[in-house]
Image (cartoon, rainbow, N blue to C red):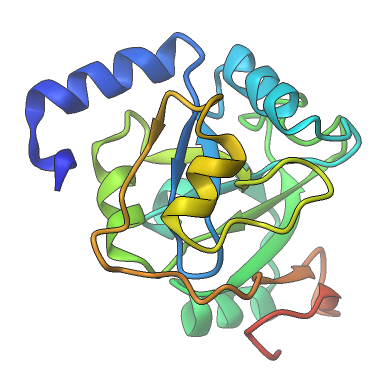
Length: 196
């Protein structure tokens, strides 16, 4: 994989720190992402997708440990779900911590987190500074999310700094389940692959 090349990963991080945007495969659909603490990168994602500013981005990583500093007040039931479905096709929405910038969450006091189950995405996060990406699906608003490399190139290839190959680790094409986990009464907002 290209992420095994130290010269490339240095170049990748420099690009991300200057507001760069990358596209990548996950276990569900293709995504686009940037560094969470880089407002220019977030602005670039909203612009390239023509995305409604009231729709927040979510934070994804190769490990839940990297995501925990961005959230607070994780109820016991949510802990159980994380142990069962991370990594996997589940996005949990928690109260955000002070570490999570408002420009990611559309100025809401909550943020969604997820750990995709895909080796290519995992490897990407391992080499990215901070190991966390602010993400959304790889498509223009109103389009279906890209479900393969060719669609990702077609949808946003002209606007992303890198569109990484999937190396044969294909996505399933079904979006993640999204659930609000502010207390032990877990509310499913979007039913996807994971049933809870």
